[in-house]
Image 1 (cartoon, protein in one colour):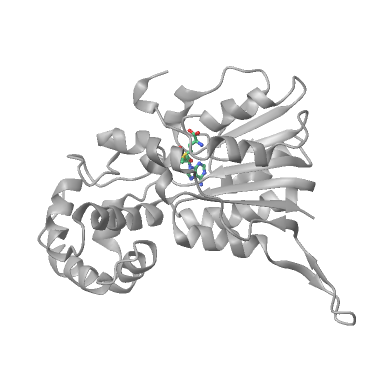
Image 2 (tube, rainbow, N blue to C red):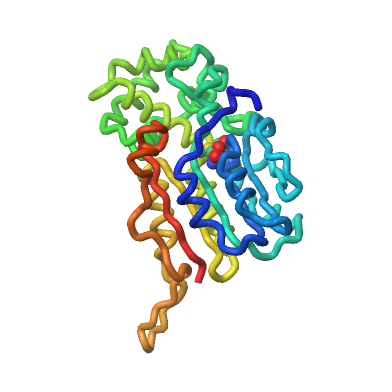
Length: 297
Ligand SMILES: C[S@@+](CC[C@H](N)C(=O)[O-])C[C@H]1O[C@@H](n2cnc3c(N)ncnc32)[C@H](O)[C@@H]1O
């Protein structure tokens, strides 16, 4: 495997333990990345099982597990149902999603994800989609930019940044990530690296429409899960974690006469599962990870 596509899997053992019930079942790894989770899942499944691995990034094609039980789907996971129809799969035993980007997205400078990159602001996981981060800076309105920086980046001076972008974009091209980061230095508060990471994360979430894809995945995965099938989601952003938590705890229907509630999931992680001390020491990416597990009712 090409070393640049390296990614250390987060919460590997707890997520695979939580995911697998039936060792001969049909499973989804919605976010293949470096395929660390997929390989661990395949190690735990028997010869009749199937694992479908989704990723919207072409580069992941270099990481595929060589295994007859594995099927690669180069697509956004929001199309889960469509692909399962195509493969004539009616029910799933488990779905794992380890959200966000892989380490190689930052390691590959020309992908334009990192605020230290000399290349243009791009940030597309799917390189065939038209919208890049620079297009957002050049085209979005003040209100749209403010919302992105405030909600996805949690930057309290979002409005000021948005106003300055609108003002300065007439004369500037921000022809690299570094150029934009240097321009944004005027708005930094607290630690620079953390602040820049939040600014760039906001753009990345918008470029890749990460929240709407997650919403669709939660719906479609839940529809396809068997009774007692598992939904396991690892997220790195409070907005995503909140979406997952609210999804898992929702009621299916309420009996108005007896007040009895039916839930979509018979059990779910009320408290997020987080990496242990050992993992936190070994993997800096694990620091913001939160995992939730739902068992379909
Ligand atoms: C955190 S990494 C997954 C790492 C993986 N679990 C491993 O062990 O190497 C997330 C991956 O999901 C992919 N991804 C993110 N959002 C996606 C989406 N909506 N559809 C398909 N793939 C997506 C990214 O391209 C990235 O490779």
